[in-house]
Amino acid sequence: MKIGELARVTGTPVETIRYYEREGLLAAPARTDGNFRIYEDTHAERLSFIRHCRSLDMSLDEIRILLRFKDAPGANCGDVNTLLDAHIVHVAARIRELRVLERQLKSLREQCPQARDAAHCGILHELSQPACPGAPISGGHVHGAHGGVRK
Image (tube, rainbow, N blue to C red):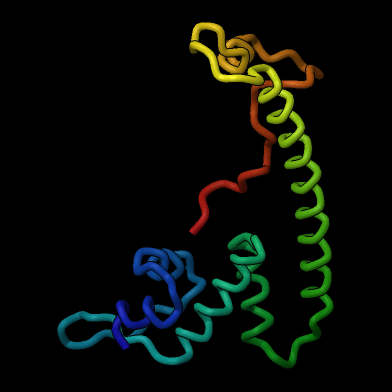
């Protein structure tokens, strides 16, 4: 199948497929005489695996490790368990950070309980103040809450 069909079958944008190939997560496919990529069912299966891992917010490095185990079915999966345990700890920390962010945003929202002219908007006023460490509204973001660029 060509890249467009693989994209359709897996629900993955073409550019993301190419990105995964560049990152070494997806093997480079064979090419036709016209230099078109030709993908096999194994590519679709692997891409579906990668997409499932990404839906669980796993990093590309975590996925690489899991793929190594997937490619070596006789290997002991103890390290897979360890990886998942570490990922669970990471997710729990992000949840805590996001809860702090939620409280900060709610506190910020309370600064302007009703619509008024922008010159007297409590939210805009508060966002204009220098961030104070330890203040309820830090004016910043929670580090690690966004995880960088996602593909």
